[in-house]
Image 1 (cartoon, helix red, strand yellow):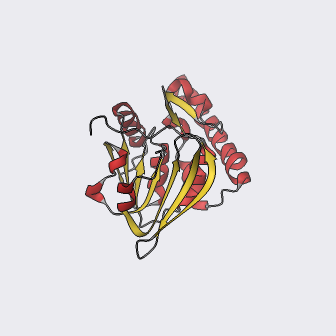
Image 2 (cartoon, one colour):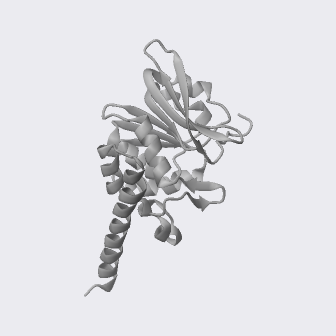
Image 3 (cartoon, helix red, strand yellow):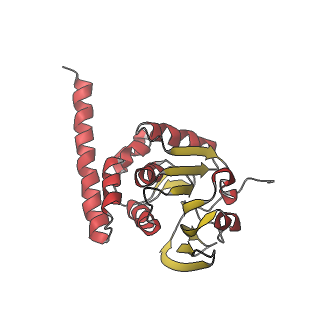
Length: 223
């Protein structure tokens, strides 16, 4: 009898229960309706994207600090932002702030391609290992300055930010396709979730949504 295997299976069943409870109590009951998104969150288990010492907190509806000054976002906020973004199966998505890779992997289930940038090497390496557990072959990762976007693969149908610039970067607006959408937290002190839409002529409309608190968006020094 392999005790370690039995214990592992029990833990996974327990995490499955907590994941479903989170989906029901914290997402569906609070208004998240996109069935594809809910199914992706059911498949992509949040505990697989946390260090071992934090796995028991994975299904709390709270942001969790994974490294000094770096967090994995609250599940409801992640789901809310993705639902606003509304990625489609043929979309090419740019994500700024890979973090642990949980949101990245969810996006990969909802879109054709995901290009994700993080400024920190330690987060790039951590997220890469996490994403590899799920075999998400439509994700490209890199270490880079999110303010610059990823011009090589632009334009993008959708852009989402997991970190807050003071103002919406013009370079990201330029890399958004006409009829595209961007969702991001924005603000120096009082942050708002913003939805930016670019119409077929390239005109921009921006709307405010929730008050939020995100890690500030970093830049490479001396760039």
